[in-house]
Length: 480
Image 1 (cartoon, rainbow, N blue to C red):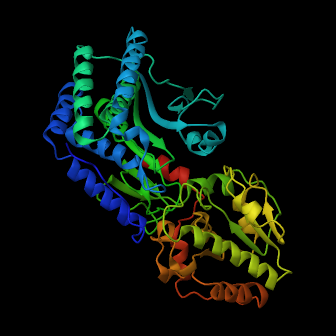
Image 2 (image 1 turned 120 degrees about the horizontal axis):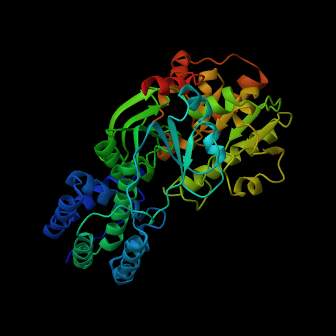
Image 3 (image 1 turned 90 degrees about the vertical axis):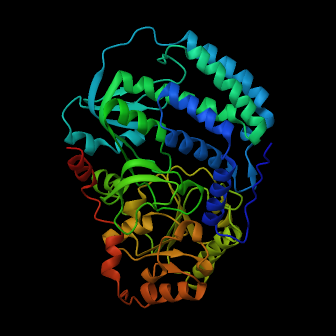
């Protein structure tokens, strides 16, 4: 039996710890039983071995909790008996509710995939208007009411109406038995991995048997699925595309990307092609989100500030992103800079604004009692930023996006240690402020003395994010 033991090193940057974990996974999977496990799936489901290996490695990798420095419980091999019972229930459900009759295939030019709300769906209005009526399908991922004119909106449920192949029972029982054995040999819950893999396969095999799409598009570049993309390619000869949602981090979410095409901010600020990812092509279009919120659906607000600090999700101490040695201390330090500057220049109007989907009150409580205003996160952050004189942030992608409007934007990065989120932002761009003294100088020069911003490479800064006014048109032109 192999013992799978891994501990991240606090003295390493998060990306180095991630790379070390991948190497350990690679070594651990050099096993004859795992090869047999993969070959049986390969033979029965006709999925290439490289795609099977990619899926397994990604699942194990994502099961590591860097915050608590251990694997999540679901991957523990001691839970295999519980997952054996779960597998029997799963088998019963998918057989009772399996597809009884194959319907005629419906054809669409584009599938906009994995939409969770009407708010998300609305961002695609401009893009959809370029296409012919009824040539776009939208798969929502829940039962929420969503409507879009001249589009086919549907929700395909997990576990129901799956298309099962012949001799499925023999295959299933053989894999359950082998997964059980493999779990105890490799000390990883392979029953959990197998059920994940199988359900992914059955879900997307059924989907792409009922519907054919030339293109598939989603807007979460950090949440791609190689099994979905492979079946799309094999059944529909379709192209998987995804939109860059934010600046590329160096943490766990920046590994195991899988897509034919990623639509990025620019050639300079795109998605890292690390050894774990499979990206065929990157096309620069600007910010799809900025196109919607700034150009397509402006609110025409007049709200503005001398200094606006933009927040980000899950950055506060003990949050999901608190995974590096200096994160907690440096994050609090950048908030202290705001408090200190508000005391030194009390006449400045200073605001702190979170993303609309923020759910914590850490910053609100931390800044309570200061003259820093907490801006309503439901307002249009792009417009308020454009109205404001100076914008800063710990790690918001909007700093890069707003450069296309020639705004004065900076990251507050104590000691240049925010490698997790800013490691791909070259210090030479002069966008990262590493000390309070430098921050104070920027405030004094730009807001108090009202001097012009002098950066030799300022013209190059605008190229970090292309103009976002016509992102949808660029996507449409690629797909036609």
